[in-house]
Structure formats: structure tokens, C-alpha cells
Length: 345
Ligand code: ADP
Ligand code: MG
Image (cartoon, rainbow, N blue to C red; front, side, top):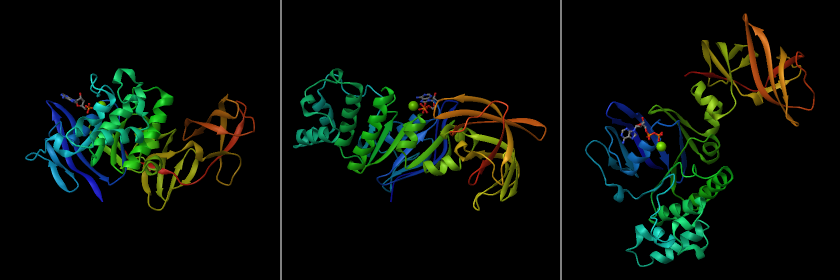
């Protein structure tokens, strides 16, 4: 079941194309994370969904109902979409309780519901009469979340909601928020530029760059089969090598490596190998390399190895978890476990 359906969405500001040709579906109760560098159109996309901007192209449907295209524009307050911004979105002169009640104050049981939401977001009820400036950053974001949940939104939009918090608290808030949203059963679209936040939160990960949707899929799929080198490197340490593809295999400096049945390629291109696929030690498929540098970090060593291949010097770096000691200049045999993937971008 689809909550949000976006088709061919576009938005231009003057000569800036903020978004173009965006297609995206969000399933009920699911968590979609949008990642992309600054200026890639993440906030514009959320503002279009929330109803603070109108699209120049395409359409947005919520629960099968058209809410935005070039003719239709359901006003933001009628969309019943919750929005939590980076910071500073609370009313500074209102108490915690009044902030949470803001969108439901006409309803008889508003206070009781707000208190229940404080419990749900793990805000101690003793804080109900405090003002936002008397709360920590994490507590303020919990109030913002409780306020957004009060109207029982059909969809929750979170625009870098943890980026103003420091690292430890950010992780804690991310996990807490995931739990709260799961409990509330509301589909969520989260924007971040933090890799760990994206990988930790997403059912569906969406890569946005320069206003275009580069790739969407599960974190696992995108990690294994990123559309291009930039996406590969963003999602984790990546070894990207020139390769000749012959259908079921890639010929590269690491040897002849198998491609999976459903991701084969022909001709010259680039292949992605993840460092955790490398093993040092003789195996039937292994290739000889020389150790170029070793950075011993106790249980883990960062190792760079090199070899001559096709007349050039190829270097590969990885964290090598091993008890045995490597020395610079030493010859090692390196083999690759599992299948590898062609990069097409
Ligand atoms: P992100 O949230 O990924 O950092 P934005 O959606 O804020 O990116 O912006 C995408 C592009 O659109 C940027 O080039 C930005 O400068 C431009 N932009 C966003 N909002 C406006 C606006 N109101 N007027 C003009 N340009 C805008
Ligand atoms: Mg933004």
C-alpha cells in the first residue's frame, strides 16, 4: 500500500533547477531516507510534499488523492502531513504542553493527548510547563516530534532533525525517533546528509544529486549495487578498479572476478569491490601484491597494497583484520570473496 506517490516532479527557481523528473513511492508505515549533498534539492522536495511550494512539473498523491500538480494545490494545513525541521521550529513563548497542543487545541481532550504524547516521546511530564529555552536540544526535538504527531499525520517529514545535536545524542535520538514512529505506525520521509543516519534508519534509501534522483532501493541493495562511483563511496569504503567485462566476469587488477547472474556486463568499465571481500592468503584465485604501507591500530591495520597491472601501478587500501603482521615491501597473495558489481554511472 502506497501512502505517497510522486511522479515526474519538477521545481525551478529562476534559472536554478532545484528538482527534475523525480519519481518516488513511499509505502505505508515505512521509512524512506533521502540523502544528498547540500543544494541537491532535499528541502525543496519536502516543501513540495508538505505544500509550502507548488510544482512546475509532475504530481504528488497522498493516499491516492491528488494533492499537488500544476492545477491542484491542497493547502498545507489540509494535507495532514507532519513536519519537523532541523531546529528552532517551536513557539518560544509557549510551554511544552501548549506547543504540543497547538494543532489540536480545539479538541476537548487536547491536554490529555499531549501528555500521552509526552510519555510516548519520553519527555517527563514535569517538563510540561517549561518553555523551549529551558530544554536541551534533544528534548526540544522530542517536543517538535510530539507536536507533529499530535494531529495524527498520514505522513511525517523530517528535515535533518538531528543535525544540530552532538554525535552521541544524535544517534540516541535517531533510534528513539525510529521507535516512536514505528509505534505511531506513520510513514516517514527523513532527510539527512549523514551516512550512518541514512543506513541506520532507512527501509528505502534515496540518493539525490543536483536535483535528480540517482537511485532508490534498500540500503543493502544500494551498498552492493550502487548506480555510480560517488554513491558507492558515500555508502562505504569502496575499491573501484578499471575492468574488462566478459558477461559473467570482470578482469581487473584483483584477478578474474565473478558477476552475479542478474548483474552482468560487457566491455570496458569500472568494477566495485568492497574491502571486506578481500582476504590476504593464498587461494586458487589469488593475485600477488606488494605491501606499500601499514598503519597498525592494534586489532586492526589499515593496509595499502600495490601491483603493476597493464603497465600501471594500482593501489588498494583496506582495513585488514588479522593477527599476522604485514611488513612494507612484503609480497602477499590477495583473493576476493563473493561476487562484484559493475558501476554504470
Ligand atoms: P538541500 O536541502 O538539499 O540543501 P534545497 O532544496 O534547499 O537543497 O535547494 C536546492 C536548490 O534550489 C539550491 O540550488 C538552492 O539554492 C535552490 N533554492 C531552494 N530554495 C530556493 C528559493 N526559495 N529561491 C531560490 N532558490 C532556491
Ligand atoms: Mg536542506
